[in-house]
Amino acid sequence: MTSSDANESTLPPPPPPPSSAQVYEVHINGGLTPASRGLVARIGVVAVVVALLGAGLVAVQGFGSSGGSESPERAVEQLLVAVGNEDFLGAAELVEPAERRTLVDPAIEVVGELKRLRVLADDFDLGAVRGVDYEFVDMTYAAEPLGPGVARVRVDGTASATGNVDELRLGELVLENVPAEELQAMQDEAAVASTEAIDDIGIVTVERGGRWYVSMWYSIAELARREAGKPAPAFGDGPTPAGGETPEETIETLAAAAADLDLGSVIAMLDPEEMAALYDYSTLFLDDADAAAAEFRAETPDFVATVDRLDLRSEINGDRAEVWIDGVAVSASGGGEGMTMDTADDCILFTYDEWNPDGECLLDRETAANEQNEWGIEFDMADFPSPSVRMRRVDGRWYLSPTDSLVQPMVELLRALDADRLQRWIDDPDLMLEESPELLQSTPALAGMAVLGIGAVYLLGTSLEQSFDEGLTVSPADDLGWQEWEQEWEEAP
Image 1 (tube, rainbow, N blue to C red):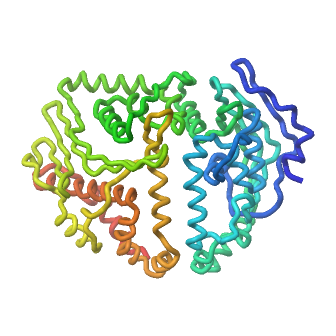
Image 2: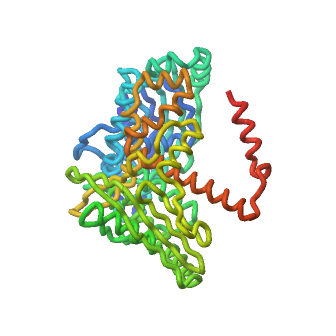
Image 3: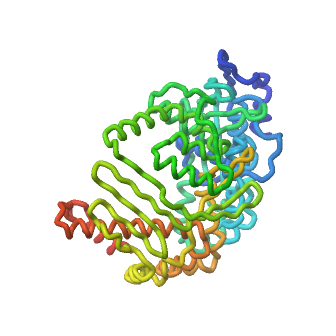
């Protein structure tokens, strides 16, 4: 008998959605006891919330209108029941649809890739995860309306977890390379039940199409609001979504708004469904951001920042698109100082005030190759693909999708890996450094990020070197702890 069946007789009829004058409370006597199978999980209170909200990362594609629940507290309760039964696919049905959409497809693919890489066993099943045993006892749920279609559910009770590493469906790559004594140590620790009191954990739910869903982003935003002591936001009064006629226009408008210190216009270029929580909760900080920008402009009346050039290209697939940033030039001046940055012809140009006034190339094709060779890596950074971002069309307008832009490069990296390569890296860690350039070249978005990161590190190092040359005061290495860090690195196994 499932935990839901065991408590069905004690639950009151589902209440209607909350109004501004109602607070609902559901008591479950006896607790939710899932079927026993075990997993390594030392749950603390925060881990419980992460387990609940993170369940959306392991959903299945194509959920229909059957998702969600009839009330806020039932949505959270059913999510806990599914987690207690180790049914993460069932738990995902309770996750807000836009969040599920932005995290579902890559998460499902990640699990498949981990199976292919032999990190997980072929029979690993998200609908019945073996080696996991959660219990939630004497749970209570009380919904507090925050605004139209938004309610915070207070959760109280007791959570416990035990595990069995032997039952956890780990793949051959893990089992063959983790020493038996370490696996046994993990098993010994997991077998000891961990019990934690859940005291006023707040999980926010949102109403979509007459059904209630758990929202990770709204829960995080509400927690931050309460920690800051701010009043509830004016839900629905955030920036009006604007988007662009084309994917490129959206990026150009967003970049111009950022240069103009206009945070509200930046938000208006983000996917309004994916970033709904940001739109709603931005009313708590946009006025302060605008005031800070106005104060800065008053102190520096001649300040000007512009995006002088954006070399963009896109590939559209239905309502999704990827935009590559092949080149960029920006400049800013004010208060008697100025800076420029330009990428063109395989060269990064950077000037700041009196530093490099002639605009000498700081990082070109030859320099990049030489610098990387000094680090023991054989590749030409200039050959790397351009960085890219992901876009989505909503109601005929194009918006930036922050989640896709961050998650997809990680998925691309997994696609480019194979189990034999991972095994080689385990046997000889130095190979990972040597083979990384080749791997990054096959993952365009991630490679572009790597290029930006390496370029930033190089520019920072060049700037510091210039500072030393000009006799500026810089803290000695001993004060920064560099020598101690270097010694620890050299002594590390």
